[in-house]
Amino acid sequence: MTGSARLPLLFLDVDGPLIPFGAEPQQYPTYELGPALRGDGANPLLTRIDPQHGARLAALPCEVVWATTWMDEANECIAPLLGLQRLAVVVWPEPSDLDDQDERDGLHWKTRALVDWAAGRPFVWVDDEVTETDRAWIASHHAGRAVVHRVDARTGLTDDDYALLAEWLG
Image (tube, rainbow, N blue to C red; front, side, top):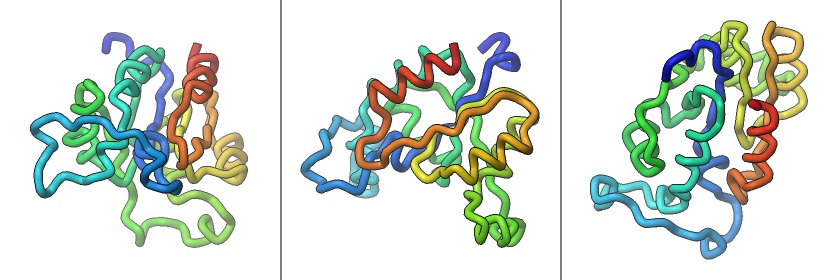
């Protein structure tokens, strides 16, 4: 994407925002998987990913970056379902490199890595596990604009979430 260095980043988690969970399984609509993702080894939760997320994410004025424990597997399994090209992936620190005090203080283990990855660029972080502790830490340690948006894992990204993202990014 031309000029993407000037666009804000959208750090996107998978489990929760794109793959809803936590409610009764029959409450979730399911979607058809492409032929490459069907089969005995396919993750059954992939059928919960609404393919319309791809067009909605692509329409946002930002650079979408996978911020998930799926790591590059998100490019292999999820990007094709959404019709997205390969996205950048945040590489997480080794557990031994994490600050245990951060977790005791309520800071999410992803927070420091995302601020480092952003390197001052504006960003929005979409996740189902973020808290006020993360918001406060980012506000005091990140030079650029940032918003931390919590998605309800039971519903995943909704119209209201996309409206908020579009407004902030616009």
